[in-house]
Image: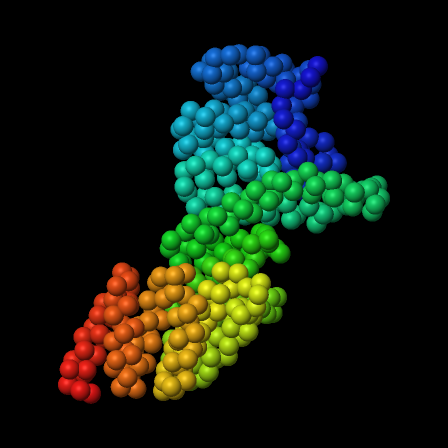
Length: 376
């Protein structure tokens, strides 16, 4: 008789399988459980099918595999019906009976994504990542050769790879869509060990430093950034975030560090190279802007102006908000050197751009116009 359940990935049925790290649900063919599942499968009415699954749970309550499978099927019923909260609850019951079952974890992740519940998405993604990475770390079954053990682990990993990659992407998407910096950083701290050497490693590092910058946790930001640079010393995102963070850090020596990182970012971007794409040019523009800003903080205004003009050329028409920031900084630098005509010219352009620095630009332009009227 054909089995009526999906084989999921390695279930606790026989003593040998107790050593496994991934679960699969197995209902042996011909058993009363299998016979009842066949009847449920043949029932075309969804409401009747649901009632039959509930009866199935009661009748086979002493069989962990049957309970896990029944709860999972009810979860999928409620998901299809649009009752996502109930779907999540029944899915969690299924996971309680088959805790390392990647198919159920993927199902739960999907439901949490539909609910736009980042916390639950991360919970399931991390659970799946940890289960996948546990393969091969269990004790070798007695009597099994090293070669057979390694082959079985390779087979388990290969079979679960697509699920692992799905959960890796789901966890990353939860990080990117989280607006609260503290929650985002908490997700990153869970994601990183669950998905070592992730294909999203560089982007996650950038989100980590952005989060720590928002939280004004300079010591953790620097530690995270320096560690990221050990892996990828030419990471533009990391270099730019460190340069920006140091440029506003009041500690002695921080501005010098901002200059160093900004210069490294300019070198890494190679904006003048024939193959430089838009992303590299934008990164170079931001780096020149930060470098000019850092020079201004050191009262090296004359040195700041060429950097800010370079930034302006790279950012104009590409990133409106960063361009506005550069114009404001350039206007400030010109004003500081009493070059009021030049200051007025760039500030008149800056005030046309709606955004965070528009009012600052307007206030500075008012002062420049007043100074110009007095002949200063």
